[in-house]
Image (cartoon, rainbow over all chains, first blue to last red; front, side, top):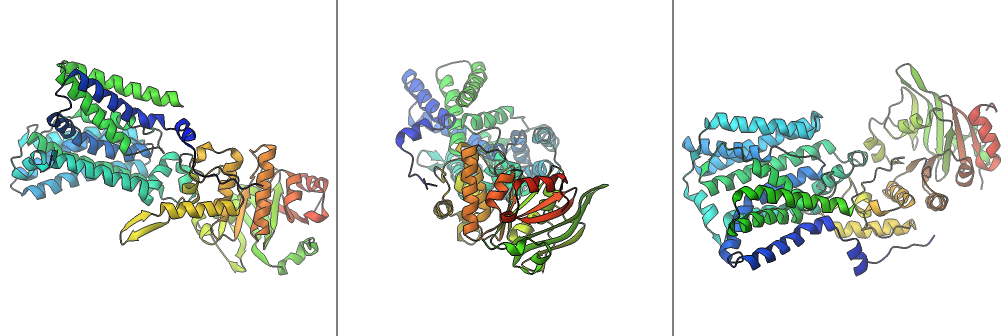
Length: 320
Length: 261
């Protein structure tokens, strides 16, 4: 038998095997930037790019968490409600007279606990992820309403103000935090055992178990990651709004899933990147920003987002 | 081939067996899947296990690979009695199984599948990152040591043919200093050419001194590859033959019960 351990694939081989679903978001982002840049001269100013980055920071953090769950062929419908609960807990603890650091820790812990509940119910309870997280979606937003008594709580803290106003150069701390989250998530997904196991569980739970991967632990871990990142997103949200509101934030849930899909992550699990969903989130933020600049009524924005997401999903399907 | 000592079932006890399972029984509720199963795997040989559907081959194999625990009987590994509670324990003891469903993750690369669950890391303290380069190099060595026809260790398993996948599974089972590789119908789903390649691979492993248990329905294959063959019928091992001294007809007779052992 001949040993044919080939060298690296040639350029044409690389092109023909190019992951088109993973390229959809970057290509669309470039196209969008060119179109909006041509239509409106203010679109590409540093001030506006700053605004786009600022607007996408929360979504990037949520989408990264969602990516880990989707990579295991699961879905976390509770991310936005979990973020809301985290924000409410932060606001209530701060209003009760604690320092801002204590309040932030409390908010992140509360969100992480929701992730833990999700993980335990899905991995140990054997209940479908869709149902579990639909339940915690409702439960977390209900808890938020109860704790806040339905009223927003202003969080007037110089620390929180600096998060969304100060920074390094044109990047605010919120944007830098989102960037750090993305980089760390990339390293975890592709350069740690957990990352490989996440992709293995998503690709084939059976095969992963047969090769000694602790599949239950991996599933709990991804919901924990999603929950704690929702808690971090809560901090960024409170910093941006200046208050902790028990609002439903449904668009964050939809956009987190949309960013993941736009980023070429397979909803069937096993194939994921971090770069893709991050670019997906930037794409959604640019789309909304550009439409606003062009004076398109904001009622058209959800429609535009919907069309872009379905178009991306269609591209993925076309590739198969 | 000096296999004369294997012809007699009784005399095999004093040869060098890596694994010896004696008088295993296993019931599932009221169903006696194993009534009295005995099998010995001589070191460095290919031993085949044949039998009709439902004869108890799979149950016996699962008892050896730790999936099931036998109700009665003894299993000795290198002369020491063992009692596996899980497949992981069996694997740690050096018994690797190539499952019929192959247990590969399609979207991971060949090297990632070879190292799945045994990833190598480097780093300091709690910060441990994957040694991707090291694992890729090692995977290349594993693959070329077995002369497996795999395009590239970085290609996704999804892009491999059935025979290449089987080869990756076998390489994974054989590549971890294992004592015994159990193969459950390794060529059942393969075409003629791919079957020939996998057979070459099995012969290559034998030449390297690996002990192999081969479950097969293909008697020609058994006669080509194996040194000895155990026959099961209705939960019992009903006979052992050296492949040098038997024929396909005799094996068929033993499997169906037309020839009493």
